[in-house]
Length: 169
Image 1 (cartoon, rainbow, N blue to C red):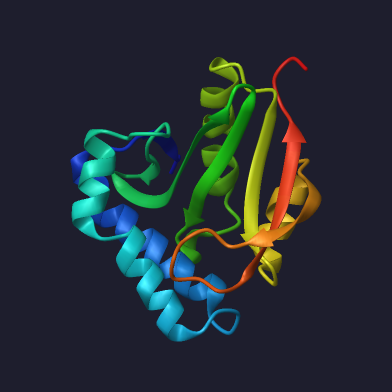
Image 2: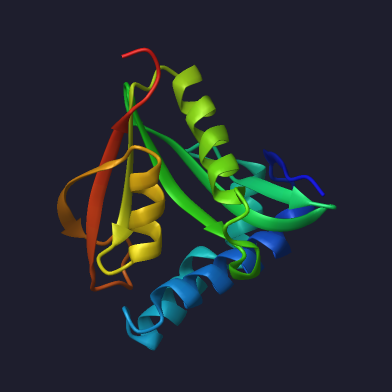
């Protein structure tokens, strides 16, 4: 069976929520307090919010989904934060489907979107202690450039900031 990566449509919203919430819980269990995990999931993966982001992705390129037989097995998205600078905002693979190249396929598609818009650098942040995420991005050429407070009103953890050169630079 092959994996297809495409822009998300309304029919994918439940799959995005399922993949991202399972990925969040598995990734951050023991790193972030349970109440912060649940508050973050409510904030970012509410179906109303996801539907709005699929319909009109303001400020980013919108959701991408990795599909296997029309089933969402991965989801992610990014966009430009400023001229020449792309950002991976979110990337999760169903925990039961990891290590099959799904995350790599999603990252490749995001990178194509960003280089088409003129990005020469790509950035991502992962929670400190998220060794799976850190290893994934380092494998793809990202290098640690520092730390910063995590994004979102519900989180109190520190994130590791990474970047890599992309495009023709």
